[in-house]
Image (cartoon, rainbow, N blue to C red; front, top):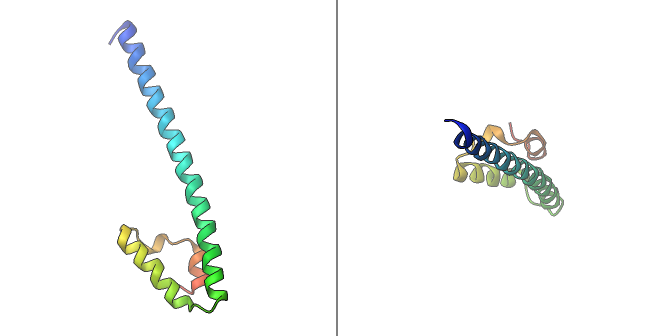
Length: 84
């Protein structure tokens, strides 16, 4: 590529990289918010009398359904539910 064609290709690539960076940052922020919500709801469910073992089953079910390794469950959630 030479001249303007190369400049356009570089500009397109730069825009794609920028857009992808923003998408990643937005997804990371949503993930952190969802983790806070999950922790809050787990604590509330336990306070209302839901057995932690049942909530751990929900986590395992969600991981299986979305094909996420159960080992990726955050330590704070695993600890709250007595998961190993």
